[in-house]
Length: 556
Image 1 (cartoon, rainbow, N blue to C red):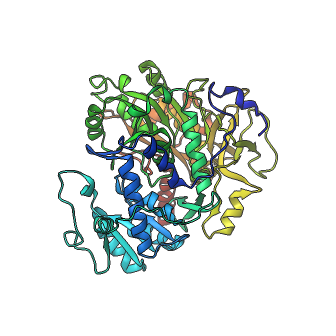
Image 2 (image 1 turned 30 degrees about the vertical axis):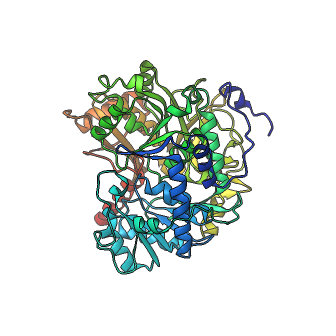
Image 3 (image 1 turned 90 degrees about the horizontal axis):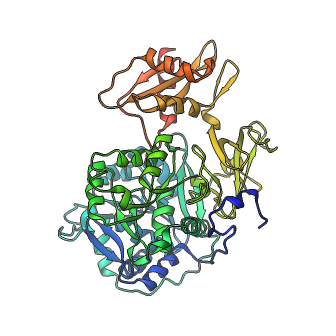
């Protein structure tokens, strides 16, 4: 690959191009289980499973699934929180050449129905706490095989559940009982090529027909290698025997899947599994860990951690090695706090369609506040005009980010029309608008579809959000465009105040007037106790827009 201008900003030992081994995803397990067989791969509430055991359990489970008739190309829905059963089932299904369909455990039966039907899921692996929803789902759609586990089944000291204790429907299968009967540790003899589909990762939320990005074995292996090599300025300073990763990002989300679970196979790191996020439980967990080598997360969680009353007592500055932040920009004060504490961090950008990666800030080298960084090895990135999407925009002008490279999806599952909209000549049209500075660093201005057009002006809500965040009383804020008979659209902001604070609409508007051009100032402020968020803590503008549209229809 030719040298690109941004390569000069890479850290000293990060390659500009990678020769990816022709591996299937599950083969990544071989590295740690061969080099450190007795090292814990997983730590789940204090119960450890070694790398050797994880690989063995996964192969046994693959043979059990094969015995049920699951074969190459079949879709297996994984509907689990972060627990040992997830990696066991994930690598098992992939060993058979089956395609994993990631499903959020918090989805309603209606949302699950859309995804299960779209992907043609024939096997669903789920857990005890979701059974009420799964029973409703199975009345609506036919799923030939339902396999159920209890979250506590892999915690020592808890009695194992059974089909009987979970009161499973006739024909449903118990995860532990299925695994127990399967003793063969012979690898399934299935030929899998890097171009074979591995994951269907749903994106684009819960309305309309969900889009399932098809990620191949090659995509996932390339993304995992990139993450591992990008972290090489600091991670290898910790010997593999001591490496750990905080597995709080959900595995069913592309970010957690790549940057935690598959990354840990290459790094030989122990995953400290967190099935749900609760800040006080998290602090108790951190207290028990000597050192967290790698902590991939989102800004809301980092803020909660470093500002927690126990942060000093736990000496977080000594405990955390490298923070990785994604899904939303890190506010300036948070970046400064991490620097003051001596914690390394890297902010990055990616989508489900780009296997979670694409653009990132160097770990050691130059970072720019508010920037998503520079393109990763083997990725090509251009900014093109928003209207036509053809010509590159000059430096400093906003343009749509388009990306090409080994982590770009194959397309959307059974959706040629949407695939053609997003993928053109191998370029992924992201729908995100950014500007590039004189050093080649990229700054997201906004989502194409979030852009507000008020009185003929293009307004990027992210800019307004940044100003709202600067208000000393504001904890969280987000702005959207709402229909306006005079301006076409007008700006509305939703604000969550810090605990114990009070503020008026006028006070917030006055603050914005000092920092924004008049046409960008929010005209309406709504105070809320909380804002709708995705599984990884990203504020969902879309949900707020839908609420507004409903209100306007009712008032019409």
